[in-house]
Length: 181
Length: 310
Image 1: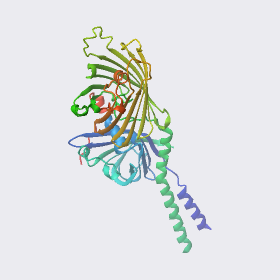
Image 2 (image 1 turned 90 degrees about the horizontal axis):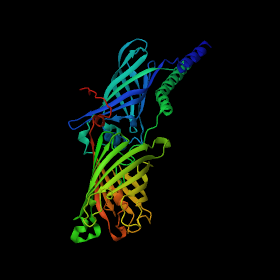
Image 3 (image 1 turned 90 degrees about the vertical axis):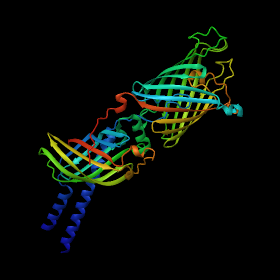
Image 4 (image 1 turned 180 degrees about the vertical axis):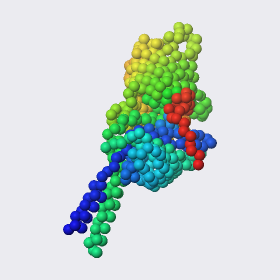
C-alpha cells in the first residue's frame, strides 16, 4: 500500500515536475561570416526566435532564412534563390541541450557546452560547441561561436565561385532572452 | 523483487518519455510563436533582369546601386550571306539605371537607332508579399525619348518634334519560383506623327513572361500589342520577342530574338515593321552588370564583426 502510494507520487512528480522559468526572445542575433582572399561575406539575422530552459538545460532556436541581411543585395538574392533555396526550405532550426552550471538568478558569466541538432536546408546534423550565458538584470544572454561547412547541409556552391566562399563558415550567435510565462 | 523491477522499468520509461517530449516541445513552442508574430515578407526575384527583352520589368537596382545595360541588335537574319545574316549591321543601346531608393529608379540611355537619347523614372509603389497578402507588384514607368538623327529633307524637325513620351503601368506577379508574368498598359504621346491619319496619343498593351528552368537560366517571351488604327499610315507589326537569360554572379546575359530593332518603348512599340513569318528577325543580346556605388549599397546596414581567429 505504502509502496504503491510512493510509486504513484514519484511518477506524478516526474511527469508534473515543477517547470522552471523559461527565457525567450524573438529578436535574437545570428550572423555568419566567410573570409577569403577574394571576398568577405557577412550576413546578419536579427529576428531569431530562441528559448532557453535553464532548469532542464534545453534550448531551441528557429529563424527564417529570408531574414539574413547581406551587405550586398545581389548576394542576398543569390543566397535565397540559388544556395539555400529559402522558398523551399524557409526555416533553419536548432534543438539541443547544454552542460555546465547556470543559475539564472545570480548575475555572472557561465561557460557551457552546447550540443544538439542543427537543421539547415532540410538537412540535420549534430553539432557541439562551446558557449556562454551571461546573467544580467532580468536578462539571460546566450552567445556562441562555431563553424559549419556548407556542403554538410547539401548547399551546393558552383566551382566558378567556390574560391569566393570559405570552406568553413563562422557562425556567431547572441540571443538576449527575457523571462516568459 | 518482481514488483521492484517493474517499478524501476516503469519509472525510467516515464522519465525518458517526458524528457524526450521536452526536447521538441521547445521548438514547437517557437514555431507557434513565429506563426503568430511573423511579418509579411516581400517577394523578391520576380525577374532576374531589369528588361524582359525590350520592355522593363518591375525590378529596380537597389538603393545606391548602378546597373549598366548594354543592348545590342544585329541586322535581320533574312539578310542573306552577303550581310552574313545580319551580323554586319548593328544597332545598340547603352543604358545606365540607378536606384535612388530600393523602389525608385532613374535611368538614361543612348541608342544608335536614329541616334536617340532616352531617360526614365520608375517607381515601385505596390509590392507582392507572401501568403497572397498582396498578389502583385506594380511600378509606374515614365520615359522620354529624343532622336537626333539628321534628316536634311525635313528642316522643320526641331527638338520638340523629335520628342516622344510614354507612361507605362507595369503589373507583375511571381507565380512560382519558375514563372513570372508582367502586363503593362501603355500610353504613348508622339509629338510628331508621319501623317494626319495618325494619332499623337496612342494606347498599347505590353506583356511578357519569364520561365526559369534552372537556377540560373530562363526563357522569356514578350508581346507588345499596338491596336490597329492608331498609326494607320504605317505598315506596322506588333513587336514579339523571345529571349534566353543566363545569370552568372553580377551579370545577366540575355540572348534575344525580336522583330523590332528599336529598344526603347517609343521605338519598339511604334516602329516595328518586321514580320517573324518572313524572317525579319533581329538577333541580339542584353548584358547587365550591377555595381554598388554608395556606402549604403555596399553595406546594407550590416555591421563589421571581427571573425575570431582559430
